[in-house]
Amino acid sequence: MRVVLYQMMDRGSIGENIRAACKTIAKTSADFICLPEYFTIPADYKEKGKTVEDVWKEITIPTINALQSVSKKFEGYIIGGSVIEKSGNNYYNTCYVFKSGEIIAKYRKMCPVEEELEMGIKPGNNVVSVETEFGRFGILICADCINNDVVDAVASKNDIIFLPISLTDPSHPKVEGHPISERIAKDYGVIVAKVSRVARGVGVKSVVMSPTGIIKEATSCCEEELVIAVI
Image (cartoon, rainbow, N blue to C red; front, side, top):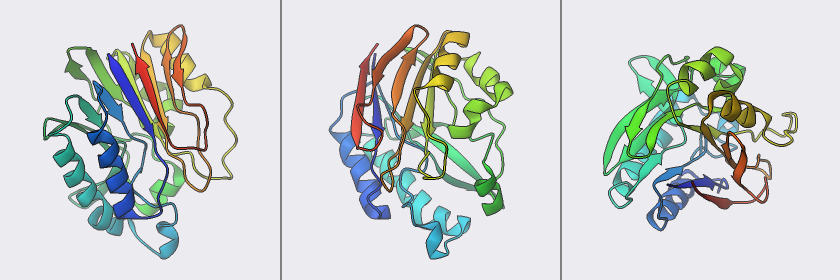
């Protein structure tokens, strides 16, 4: 099983971010490729007075269309980081999964952070477990991983956990190592594949973690990188 994490640099442009993600997917050979949380939203987007509705219209729709298109050329599963989903009058931080040109699953972040709640993003309540030839995989998005009940609901049902994150706020406490990923992997006997984006020179090292330790880790937290793990 070949797992690739795209620790992606923010280009500062919606179009450039989408193109970078699709170009990388198209030239990558893997059973799974995972993108970071909010990977196509420029770091300064909210500073321009944009709303969650703007994100959905201007970023989510073209991102989903692009990933669905490139998934036709990619042999494995694309775990599409996350985008803002609109459902009725509600908005969610949602990870879509693509395979062979189809959306085969989606997971809504269960534990939005305060900034997301202020924007109008609602908590999700769906546990994802996708059956594949490599075992079952599930998804957690960023802050979900610090909620024990959410972790238990997801990790107890799956063999691999994909964890897209976006810790790009310079004021966020510095994270040393991978204590949460390590704990989840050991406690539940699962593989944890955590991928961060890099924006404004800030990020977290992406990692593929097994119950016995690190399988593959990014060399830097502040540079774009493909983390490739053969399991």
